[in-house]
Amino acid sequence: MITAGTVQPILPLYDKEMECLYCNKTFITKKVRSKFIRIKKRDSDLCNHYEGINPYYYEVFVCSHCNYAFTERFQPINNICNEIIKERYIKNTALANLNGERSLEQAVKAFKLALLCATLAGESSYILAGLCLKLAWLYRYDNNNEETRFLNNALDNYIKTYEQGDIATLNKASLLYIIGELENSLGDYERARRWFSILLSDKTLDPKIVKIAKDRWQELRYERTLEEDSK
Ligand SMILES: [Zn+2]
Image (tube, rainbow, N blue to C red; front, side, top):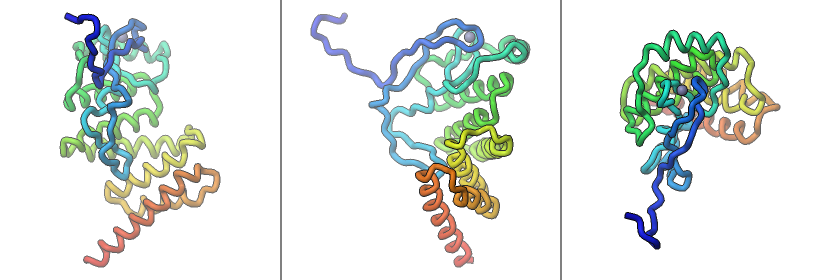
């Protein structure tokens, strides 16, 4: 029983009411309070490792009425896609119940549902790429080989985004950086070199990201020299 004067502890997770993009009903999802977020380290592809609670686990909202899974970046659904989602997803999936505290496994499940919904909803390749990248990171925490598959999927979708040109100049530098970084981590140094060179020679891009990319490229070149020397 709560009596007057009792101090309630502040917990890392809180409830947030969301409106579903598919059925428009409201449901409760968990969110992480920012003061509990502690980054332990960051990988070169920008994957954060957290101490304690991991905010990535809660980026996907899964509607408790219809199971539609989405993030803050998803667009409203048009009529054609609405029908496709109903036929190929809503009718065939059992309610996932992912609205409480999530384990790594449940976070993976939420992202996989979101990836499926994004595909059916015709979301942009940029959105698909972001979901694949986060899935790869979740698998990385677990040393699971599936990481490579999703890094590859992320890379394909980021390249598609670049080729389609549907990216604001503000994001172009970050996009080129992540493409270069993924090419290298997936073993294609030559292709990584080409992407970094596009980034570093474009004078219209965000100088802050260009500086990070320049440092990263020097690092990669240095690592490469060490590898060559040890052969
Ligand atoms: Zn719904």
